[in-house]
Amino acid sequence: MERKGCVQVDAHTAVRQGQFEGKRICGTRGGVPFVNVTRVDKDGYCPKNTAPCVPDADPENIVCYDIKAGKKNCPITDLKFVKNSEVDAYIANNYNSYEFNSTTSIVTSRLTNSLPPTSIQLEHAPCIDGQTQSAIPKTSFFPAEIMRMENGCPMETNSKLSTDPRFTSSSFVTNEYDV
Image (cartoon, rainbow, N blue to C red; front, side, top):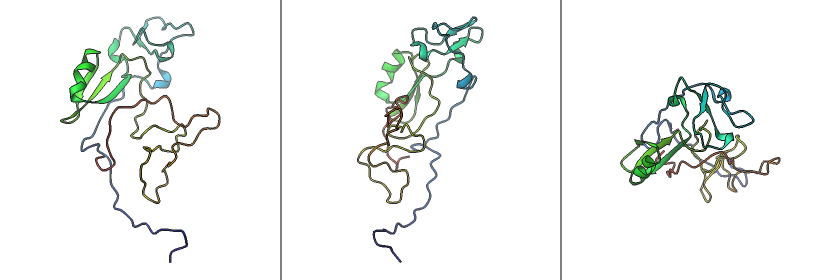
């Protein structure tokens, strides 16, 4: 029996999304947890026997590495999906490139003026409220979908922000069918 104003929504088969466009992207966590990473002091200098991974970065973005261990322990600070035709420009700016498919590559850098990513999410622009998920504007939703945010992310009362400004776009465009 249907109630007035309700719509019956038929069940759909579950879709496991362990792959992304038919591929699985793997990474290795290295070094110490970010909360324990060596940072600059109040004057903007790394402690003794350490050096900044990116010397000309803003102080709030500087991570210090153990000089004996070498820069190989510096974290990735930028990760993007780019068209294969754009890869050479990134390589010229000290990025590493990894082919993703016939049209797209993943480029990474340890030398950008930013902190390392601590999470990667597949969504439009992450909401400041971690309990909600953003959506691409003018997206249609499954009628009973709980996480839909038709009017964008809700505004957080203290900061007056709706999306999290710490996140940057990976420049990759896809759709739910391909994922």
